[in-house]
Amino acid sequence: MTQAKMLEGKVIAVTGGGRGIGREIALLCAREGAAVVVNDFGGSLSGDGGDAGPAGDVCAQITSACGQAVANLASVADPDGAASIVQSALDAFGRIDGVVNNAGVSRDRIFHKMSADDWQAVVDVHLDGSYHLARAAAPHFRAQGSGAFVHMTSTSGLIGNVGQANYAAAKMGIVGLSTSIALDMRSFGVRSNCVAPFAWSRMTESIPAETEDQKQRVERLKTMTPDKVAPMVAFLCSDAADEVNGQIFCVRKNEIFLFSLPRPIRSLHRSDGWTVGSLADELLPAIRPSLIPLQVSSDIFAWDPV
Image 1 (cartoon, rainbow, N blue to C red):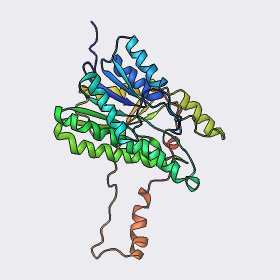
Image 2: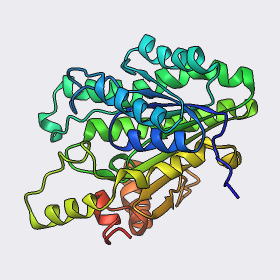
Image 3: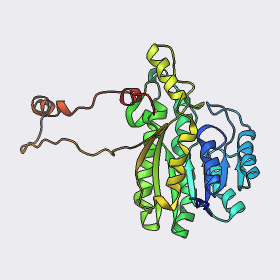
Image 4: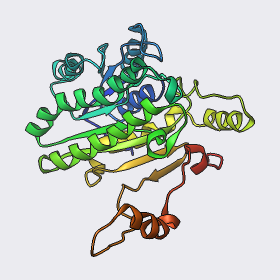
């Protein structure tokens, strides 16, 4: 018996769909029955230039396997460009059912050397781009009473990494955006979730590999291929995930993690209020055991991926 395709009849837009994780998501969504808008302007890792090849190649691969796909070369950093992605779905397939906000650029710098341009370029694509496309799709989702957003976040923001203040801030902003969308649109049958992927791609090729620990981390990353991330994203776009909303998942090779959301962990009450001195004398000793140490992603995910 042929297994039912999880995304049959759905139309999914995937940004950054020409390479890496986005490419694997687009290909898997198509194999699961979705018509796919493959958005990728084909720029460099830093966001410069443009090339129609990556998006076109993925569409050709999908259509050669009897799937349906159209390419869109717009930049999500431009509100009109993001809106054109939704319009591509409507023009080609008559509807839109899912949005995967995956497009990204990287301009890693240690914070005191990070320029305003480095900051803005990353925020424009990751955070603003996710907003622009989600906002363009939202009225259509509301009108049809269904829809799924999947936004790519990162442990660089959820936990921390060195030299990525722009990227980490944008990725944490995406978590807040996703939660707000989930709350605002749940009454219309619309879901919004985040996925933090571990995968070797051009987004991770810039990670320093000078010390022995760094070299070992890079070698671990190389075993985590982009195709391992795609099933979680496709699942979140499917009706099978209709009870999953406002969540943060992490995919690391064959491991899947559900992240906790920030919630209070300790409290201390003083009936006559607090002074600077009493904070130092009473609050600090009380919360000291619960203070979370500064760590980077590799401190938390210290074991080899399985």
